Each structure stands twice: as structure tokens, then as C-alpha cells.
Length: 345
Image: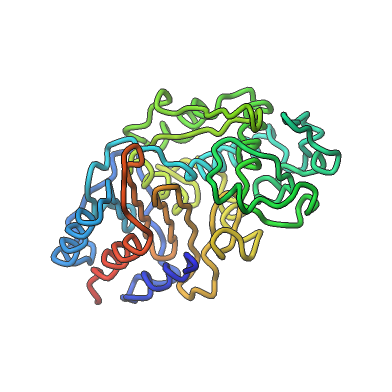
């Protein structure tokens, strides 16, 4: 099933007054995220208890749901830092917005102009003509092996040279990893320390530690490492709320508003799982019928979803450091249960 279809199922279950297009998100402050009794913000405590029981049954590690910037539902160890796999990509994407605004990153530069190459196989001149923006859209046309790929990426990777830069979407770890290399080379900053200073600290991430993050090398495939974040569910929810609020936190613009708009619109109409793709965000198509929205997933059924017009941020986490047996249909059911707990006005 296309993921946006799953979101349609989840979010068209209810359509209460004050829960539709045009609803303004509450601006986040500098204090801890506020926990509220669900009934005080229009949610059924009884029905959410059913969702909590189901989360435990299917083996979720942590779940957080925000409405209007407040935690109205949580389950599990929301303070525990867990690997978030591909949700690393919007984290780096936010840094790109900040540093582009400062003039330190130029999306029009090509990898060749920046001096990017690879081993064990060198890039061709055509591949070197891929721009930074092409990488952000996962449209580089560079089909070199990459660190941190899952088998499905290897199996689906196009033949090298089969598509020129900018012309074809392929969800490509080479693009994402090289964006990390470019960020560090052009800004002379390390990804994780920059994220802590520029984002985690200003928005009050309570659990984030640079020491929990790591680079992952597979030098027999590529010189460019993957960059793996470990983040708690409640801190991931904060990041989602930052995007829900157009990049603002406590009256301060953390991520430029124009970057939020640019990165969360579909530059590819049908990308990851059939949904649109922006700059390292999957975009829920307008035809879904409930307003704007964007999300990213991670291996092991991690989910961060942001629905600004509905004032919702949803986070689902799984402990992938041990054996797990949870699948997407179960998560769709869980999210549907949470949203269906809304009390109609």
C-alpha cells in the first residue's frame, strides 16, 4: 500500500470542528513539552487506553503524539535514545537550510566543482555534473555503491550511467551520504556537533548526546560514510514540532521558513513508496484531501509524521538493537486508533 494511502485512512477517520485546514499551530516555547490530559484537548482517554494496550501488544518501543504542541498521548520509554536510521536525513536537511541561509552552502554547485569523487570506482564527468540540489532530491544519477544500504536498495539500484543528473528519482544512500561529506567539507563543521548547537539545544532536546551518534564506513564500497543519529521519541517529536511551526521555536527562527516550505513540497511527484519527495522528506500528496503533510520513515518501522494543518506530530519508535517482529500494517492500525480517539465537537 502506498504510504500516503495509509495516512488517508488514518486521518479521514475523524473530521472534528477546529481540526481542519487553516488551524494555526501553537508556537513552541523554551520549556519542556507540556503533557496534558487527553480530554482537555478533545481526545478520549478511554479510546487512547485501547491504543496504549495495542502498542504494547505489537511491540512498539515508544509512541508520542502531539496536538497543538502538547503531548496528549505517549507510551513506552519516550526518553530512551534509539537509532533512527533513515530519519537521519531530515535532520541533516534542516542543517542544510540553516547553512544555506548563511551563504555557506550553495545548492547550485556540482559535486565536481566541490571536489567530490569516490572509490573503488571513480565518478564519470557526467556524474560529477550532479548539483547539490539533485542530491537533496535524490536525483543525482550517481549509482555508485554506498555505505549503509539495505538489500532492497542494492537490488533496485539502476545501472551506472543509465540516467543523467536531475532526471530520475531513486532513493539513494549515495546521495544522502555525500550530502554529509559536502556539509562537513563546505562548513568545516561536524554534523552531530552542528546539529546539537544549531537545533537540539535551541529547541530543548532533553536527551540528545553527540556521543550517541556515529559515522558508519564501508570503505570497500564508498569513501563517504553514513551518519547515524540516536534520538529519543520525545526529542524526535520536538523536531517535528519545529517543522510544524515553520522553523520557529520560542520566538526564534531556528530553521529558515522558506527552507521549511521548499524542502517539504514535492520536487518529485512520485518518489519513495509512491508518495512525493522533497528535500529528504516524503510528501503526502494534496489529493489525499486533508491538507499538507510530510513524513520520513526509518528501518524497523520508525515514523516521524508532521501534519501542520491538523496540528499533529506523530512519532513511532522500535528498538532495532534487538530482534523485533512488528510490521507497517500494525503501525497503521495503531496510528488510526490514536486519531480515531478524537472527540467530535
